[in-house]
Image (cartoon, rainbow, N blue to C red):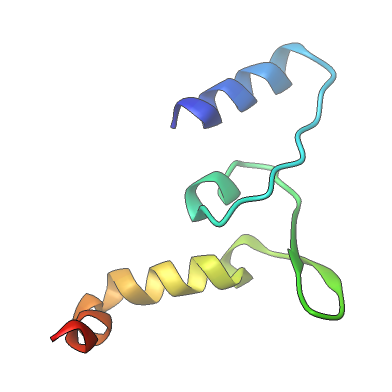
Length: 72
């Protein structure tokens, strides 16, 4: 969260941009972010809720038992 605050404050007060490589759906959720997924053969701009990492985390949070049952 501190990183997000830093980024938003920097963008407010400076002519700046950030290029961030992350798997974090929280960091990807920064308002106004342009998101790109790099795949084997291409790089494509995607919407936040269409990112693979968002879908994985959402699926897990909606039904953690479906993932955790594999640990038994």
